[in-house]
Length: 189
Image (cartoon, rainbow, N blue to C red; front, side, top):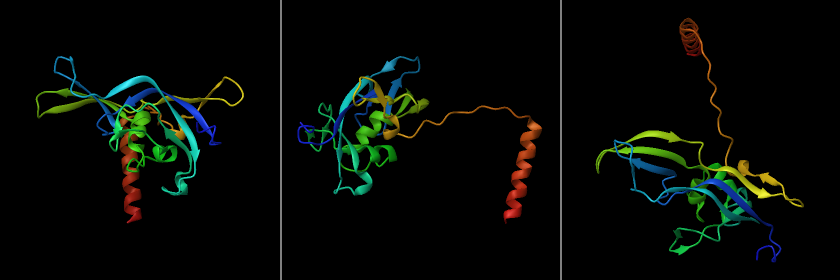
């Protein structure tokens, strides 16, 4: 319908799409002390989810948020009392501006939630045992204009994941680096 009105619109697919039901920006999995999954939350991770993006000028939010906006025609949660999602600015999602109207926190979680595993000991005690910050929001894609190839638009939704670099140094090198830091600190004072 939006294309018929002359509004640029495209379909977006998000793989490992989070469904954060309590909007705490994490997908929480609970297990008991034996490792058995407990069903204490309705959070889930879907293999994929599809929504639309349309290009809007955002006079209501300011020009910083102009551009592609997420519109989900199949929302699974109520927003302000009705089943709706969007228009959420992809710029707001990327920048983590989750307090804006139009479900930006829900879409942020769909592409960037942490996947957290908790051991549930009792009604009052739980312990976080694992957190994966890279599992959610993979290969966010749309179709290329003019051919059937995939265009990766993940960087429109989130910054690149930080790669961990492991390296080894000897204890003496580590100790000397601490001494160098102390010299810099003393010099700076």
